[in-house]
Image (cartoon, rainbow, N blue to C red):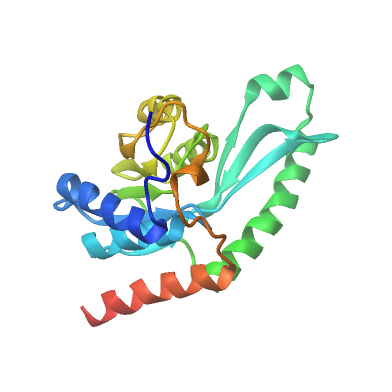
Length: 222
């Protein structure tokens, strides 16, 4: 049994996770750090600083089955990547037109969120790069799995998942879809991501923008 909490806040988690990632990937070719917003961004910012790498976001939007939107038939993510679940689509007889309509709807929201975070900048080229995908934790790992599957379509050299805390099941699943999974802490029972932080305050869009711009400035001045 572990005493709660394990981390003071996301900055504390980010500093500790950054040290672990640096030990494995300090010499990685052309690294880029992508955070799942919003909570993953302050954690990822410390990793980007350690690796002197660009920092950006990977926005994931679920594609709900028409009329049963809580049931996912796939997802879209930053960079134009799309993942579909053929079993759900076949079982529920979802038409190609329905899929196209749902993709179009969620693309509007995805673009809105990306614009809120990075303005007019597009997702950087990922082909041939080491992509480190970061969140503040993972209970089921479902969102991170979709991000990894979607980013894989963009041709990175390797995809590394980095998490301060996650359930053992999530780590096992993410290790199977990513090239590596760096996780500091796998408590059992898990309780939930927020249980392991003393301060788990929610962020707003402006917090994300400021963190992205801060790393951009650091890289610009060398």
